[in-house]
Length: 117
Image (tube, rainbow, N blue to C red; front, side):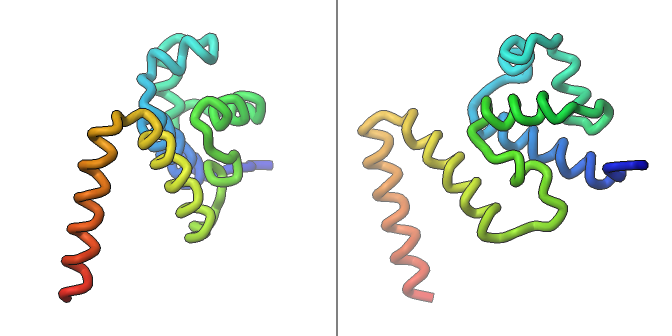
């Protein structure tokens, strides 16, 4: 029985890459954490290598996302937004106070420009 189609594998691969990039990790760093060679991560992210449930769970943990987000067959807007918020929060936590202040100022400007429309 075929569990995933090519399109599903491609979607999972795309989400794994997005999660890795949002986590600020290189393929080499993830490979080291997983005990793989870097090309293995590249093959996974290209959808050319299948991954086990254990590997998927470990990658989700490393990236700080839910397995359900990575494997979801449909785009659940709320779930997708929740995952994006988590990834954004991780990136925000790495910023300096000065950069956070500049970002908040930019957000304020964007909100004001939206109200003018």
